[in-house]
Length: 526
Figure 1 (tube, one colour):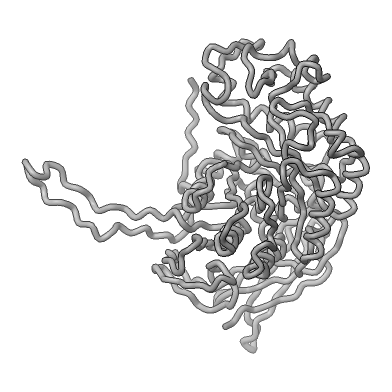
Figure 2: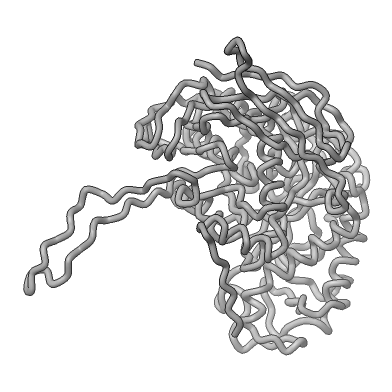
């Protein structure tokens, strides 16, 4: 086998080099960093459009609407044909979705059937020897199999209304022989069962991504399983587990391995449970409410409805910052979500446990002090430290790295190189900002800006140190950035001769303009 070693000098540098070697990190469309709502599995076209209208009436931002298996006339296995009873007019339905400024995200797994469907007959010669969910398993290592599959997907979905179809949820591409296909399965390419199990998620992501790339429009989707080399692929891993602490641990640790991972929110008997999960998910790569098996809406729990809306609105307002962070991922390889071990100035101290005294009988080995794990907080980009609050928890500790840190909401000084305890109200989740940081934001809106739309920008400055940022921008939709159509606009904040804070904007020297009309500076002084 070949072994690739990605060296430092720092662990973050090693990760950057790995991500760049894989092709650079994914740069999603701007709407892909908005909010996704998944509707019930058997929803009809009318019910989906009603859901979109309710979001608008409630004043809750919505950028993507997710359809589960019921959009097809047969799922488990999948036909990849619209269900005529629920979606009698796919073209008209997608046109109405597009007019609302929303993109559709469609669920599927890649196991094809029943036998009478057109796609089954075309892919049968390229299938493995065993079924999954009673469907054939196409060998996507064969180019012709990928071409047949994507051509069908384009005819039935992608080309029906390109402005409406944003992406897909790729399910059930992970697992082992008891969940997918057994070790003795054979495939036409000659690849063995284990090789295909390990790479199937990647193969499917690449096939879908290349279809969008050829059409010069970006996508943002979900995937149930992936593997090494996934950095350039705009798919976020999801999981059926729902334990909050595990979600946050996985979210932070995803920065170690070149993948995107997000928790999710589902229906709940507790408004606080939904709210705390929503606040956390809004500071992840993909924010979504998964209502596929629930009758609940985001406004079901009236006691927290306003706070739920505030969390989603704040995510939309932070779009310029999030988008810039993903540009760093693409061009520099820097992961957008970073565990604290990768944050500059983080000192993870040993616990108070002392090393045991060496004793030949009772304790033959000295035990070193335990190193504290920090897995319940993480960095989102260079400047924001995110410390989610679990449902039912009233207070928590937060480790602040070296340098001064400030409360995101108030600008109040929080601490420096220390562990603090916070007890926020239900209205907010703890977020801290590094001294001297510039946080670009939008005014509240109901969906991400469209290509060519010009909007105003608010730039917040935190702390006492001067700050600067070269803010990335492009059309937010196409792959024209690969041909140089992007800008890095200089933002800087410093005190003038009278001691007053002033902000300056320096256009990109290339002359390529950004998408912002006017800049309002806010100096977050408590």
